[in-house]
Amino acid sequence: MRRAIYDIIETGEKYPALNKAYSVFMLCCIAVSIIPLLFKEITPAMIKLDSIIVWVFIADYGLRLITADLKYEMGFKSFIKYPFSAIAIIDLLSILPSLGFIHESFKVLRVVRMHRYTRVFRIAQTLRIFKVVRYTRSTAVLAKVLRDSRDALIIVTALAVGYILSTALIMFNVEPQTFDTFFDAVYWATVSLTTVGYGDIYSVTVAGRLISMISSFVGIAIVALPSCIITAAFVKELNSDDSVNFDGLYLYDNSNKHDDRGGCEGCDKYDSCDKSSDE
Image (tube, rainbow, N blue to C red; front, side, top):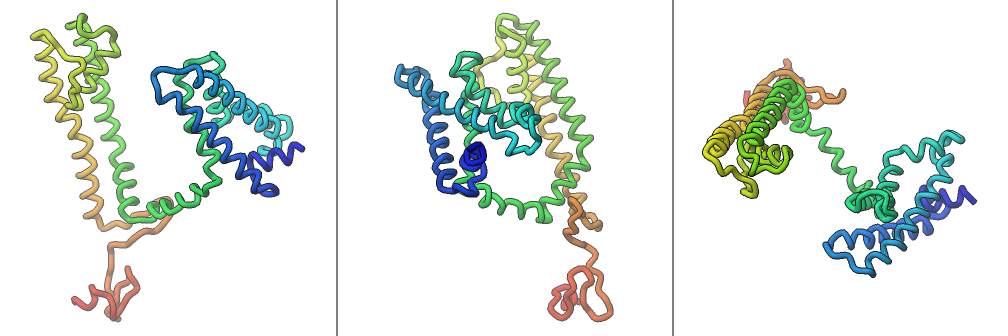
């Protein structure tokens, strides 16, 4: 009985039709449960609908728990391991708000639950096309550039965070009437540093406006630094004669040395090679 339940809710090897129907049913329940989150005012009908759907989620959680040993094949330890798995925690956090244990905002985690059931549409297989990105030269070069520039980028990030916190602390004390909390000051400093400036919080004193002007100028420099670092490293890497190895995969070779037969060692072409014909 438990093995049949596990096949229906997980694998679908013996009962593919039931597995597909169960996945579609759960997707519909999740989609319906998200609808109330789109509205500020909750109607009694929405509350009633949510209370029904949450019991569906509880049943699903219970079925997965009692079949955990079939999933992990660890005996009794499986029943202890499953509640601490990432997806089980997400399932639980999406259930508890409807029971009044935690804040309603955790209901948005129900969106994450959808990935478990979308296998019925074979979305995971269509996403395999993105694996080709790993094997492109540009991706390998970019990954190497980010790896080589890691220390400089960390320093710039630390500088930006330090400047944001320092400016926020100064403004929080210069204009206490403008910022109700220190977090408001941090928000203002971040927006000012990135030169976005939403305008919902702004300085009103001469000292505060002076700090705002300085913060904007410093922000232009700090925001530009990562771009400069990455661009310089990228250009350096492209001009390098070294081959790029990414995750053990040989991607390209810039040597292209011509052999005695007029071909190129780098591309294994002879008469049809553009380089050899040019020479």
